[in-house]
Image (tube, rainbow, N blue to C red):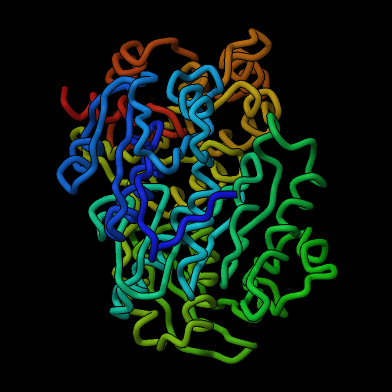
Length: 459
């Protein structure tokens, strides 16, 4: 297999360079004097930025974009063999690799690599660690799956030996990584269009943990029901975090301020290690912060740097993100698209000042909706009122086997106040007639549901 080496820069062409992860990897290589070209179906702020820093961007994907001077072609999972550029690269015999393989190879060029994995919380935890590293002036390279204000985007190119990245389990892409520090936040059923069952998922996470560098460290949630399975025959050092007794990193005296932000007393091996204050909401973020602390401590950072980095972290785009107010109604947007994520977000909302809670939920993919229909119904029941949008298809075709109407029917049968409206315009008009007082509105989902809140704020 072709091996990317920083001391041997070549010409790399990205098919789908406008994606948030692909663009970040392209920028890392640009900083290392690689020649970068790439194509996408439409221009965007991301492609404009890449052009400004030296990449050659082509709008439209055609065979002639694959020129003979290209040494390596990188493609996303969304690119299929019938793509003109993919086919042309194969015909020319140019080495090719997926985005995940490239990310793993870039990671191998750093002595201190950190990979954050888990069914939920990857972006938030990666962002927390990023904030700590930046406040500690370690000059890291960062690749995060969301937009982080602190780095004005999703990528930061540093000049130290530290590389921090998310590690996604979908299609086992994280098995391309061999990090020094491996963080596993949680392991639950998801992406059932790829995985067979929870045992299949646990097997993948165990393999991932085993790929940690021999002298590295695994940091994992000790409260999970399947922690023991992940630790079985694990040939690596590890520490645990969680709220249950016996974890290496834990918390007590957890409280939430008037805005719902958490604070707690940190426990390290059962001993008090001072107060931790967060500027993010929910018990799930207490757990996320514990994993970040464990990683930072393993790297030798001081508690002063850790506390400063955590208290200065105000969240990531689309993670309980304040969007604005319509009169006295507060509008929040959240990326939650799995029942566990929804439950965590709505628990956090309980500590946020409001009268009644409205949730506009856009299910994400047909397979996930079908697999968790009952779980979605239960998780959403924590809201006073629920409005359902059509399913966001993402990468999937509509098989006709499940729809948002099915979820609405299930929730109505359980006595919930739920409404299914097909268009965003209908949802916006409906909400304007129903929102009142100090209500809290959360637009929720991994698709484009955030546009509803943004349009309401314009009216």
